[in-house]
Length: 287
Length: 341
Image 1 (cartoon, rainbow over the protein chains, first blue to last red):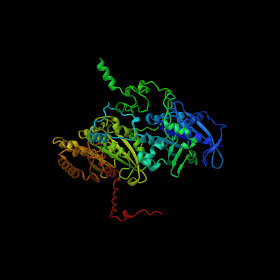
Image 2: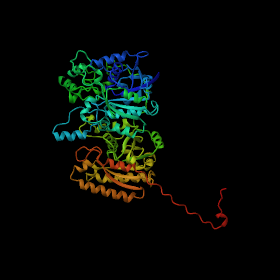
Image 3: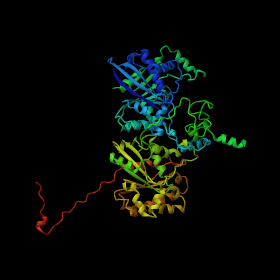
Image 4: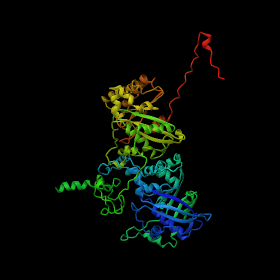
């Protein structure tokens, strides 16, 4: 059996754990045909965390935030298209660890080791992208509308105020600089919550260009040598119930639970078309 | 006492700098206000903040590459790495140096600039800090740029690609406090330390458009510009291959007044004077008008910056080699040459 590792990175709440949950459901359920990777065995696996998050996913309940200090390595024993066994290891690391790299310019030794993987899945929540906005534009708009600018104390600069695309570009640049550089790598940009972005009527690459133009330019110029592609991913399929059990449930979550095959909630939109197969980008990363 | 308490309460919002609960009434993390551990705390309260549930203390980490301005040594390393252009942005304090640098970077946030694309930067924190006071997140009443602090020159870095930047070009922009350039007119020996000027492919001298609107200040603005250029030339920082951009800044302020034409003709006369006095010291002198961070709607944000970038990207003109005339000797023996076997 060959051992492969793929690192899943992204800012907090970008959909990393939800992806792992949906992926584990998909490979263990085996109800989607012609998948790029298939389930092999539970032997030598550590399925406890995966089972836990997949159960919440099936129950259409939002995943609890991955706690800081709760870095987990999860492994799946799969079979590739030629029936060769392959053990794929992913980290389930809180987004704060990656945010810390941007803000504090350092990284936990454990995370640095995890980041040695040759395949990178970068998650971007397509509905919570913080775009840069300029004071003069707000001033002009407020003047046109005849409304005062929102009051509030002056805010000191903090790296966290940087637009999403700047933080993501820095994360990728950092992976191609010492001490984290391991040479050119493969990269899949996963635009999560794609169902919420579809109103824009853009293909994933066009969405990247429109909503994250700095990241799109960085990838197009590609001085860091990434082999990359972009996918839109709807791993939840809609709104889920809140993580806390004492809160009211969401009507959409009930509809999702009523679906006979939860795997059909999953939608992966790539250049080649749309499918339920979350293993396809993983197989591409392992090429 | 109650009034004082109310005042304090009104100021307190959220210690999370990304949260705009004061304006929106909503927690940025989507929590109820009573549940959010940051709500009700000041932004600077983070030092004694109670860790969130499940939050562990930070483990000592491995240092990764910094993202602040570059030291002269770092800049030298970039110069050795490949094609690069060094740009010295010069001008008195408040002429708009920082705004210009911030504006160029901010234009890439929206797409390609002058046919070039963002490819990489080693100074993203520095750019972001510089842009902050023009962004909505700063919550100031008007756009603003902080003064460059006194001290050694700082370098900003942008790798560009595509269009005129072809397969890659590093743009290294030197930023030094305006006071340093102003002081060089009193003591020209300080010019020796202006390595960003000596290394520069293009020198960019800024003329504060707001000062040109004032009858008295405009004469001093012209005098400052000419004296700084004189100091750079006399101090030996300029060689004849460098290119000069004379840039009228704060175009929005100029366009917003009735004195627009007067300011424009004054700037044109300055350009003529600079060409007359320093035409032999530079390979090219070109004028630009920019509104890097406008404070009104008279000019679009970043007006003129793409044109200036196109100027910066162009290489220095090649040094024309003067053919050496063969010396003529009177004695036949002296005309003998070595024959290579």
